[in-house]
Amino acid sequence: MTKIAIIIPTRLDAQRLPNKPLKLINNKEMILHVYDLAVKANTGDVLVATPDQKIIDLINNHGGHAVMTKNNHLTGTDRVYEVFENYLQKKPEIVINLQGDMPNLNPLAIKNLVEYMKSKLCEVGTLASTLDGEKEENDPNICKVITKKRIIQSKFDVATNFYRSSKEISADFIYHHIGIYAFTNKALIRYVSLKRSKLEIERKLEQLRALENGMKIHVGYIDACPLSVDTEQDLCEIKKIMES
Image 1 (cartoon, one colour):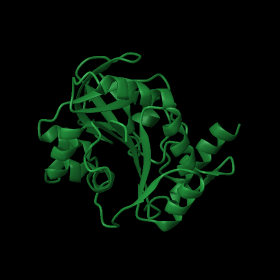
Image 2: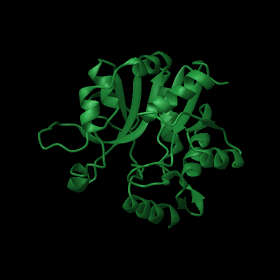
Image 3: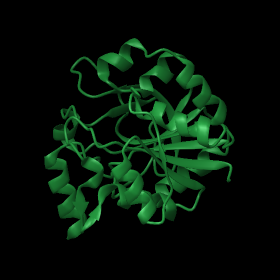
Image 4: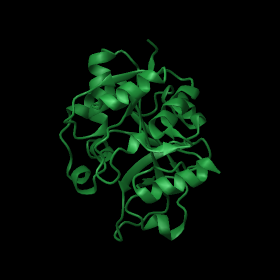
């Protein structure tokens, strides 16, 4: 067992796009694309956390490693923690929560995030990219992150807020948030011990629980923005990108 674990939480019962992990892109299931890019990052153990036997079988037949979890988790991080606590016995020093719906994420982005976390400058690390005009700014399916200072390629700064859509929010440095979180061992244990926060519930963004409880989140910039597949339209778009 390595000191770093990449855990990919995924399930078939997605409200906006049911059976999302099994959607085919280039004749290959989306979750397999994500699993393979995590392996290519070559930073630590890669595991899929899921309550669904179909996904367990798919990953195992692919030569990968999947762990069965409970079905009633409220968040992906809770599912990640179950694997961290029960299967990995809380041994990894850094735990990456990688969303299972970003099949075109560059593995180098994961590697750079892990390297930054080794510096021990924050409790939670994540990534962001440039917002693509007003369409993305107003799209509630796209999470935005505000940083204290401007971030540039491979550099990190402090996150001050996360939101989906709000006319009342104004800031100088707003970016397209990318769904990957790196926790230190102690930060993950603390995070799951906290009650769901007011803003977390209102905005449906679990990272706000960390911010509202004073946890330090740093955001790193990458120049490519992987598409998070949440809707049928997103699926059509990612197919155009990856099958061209």
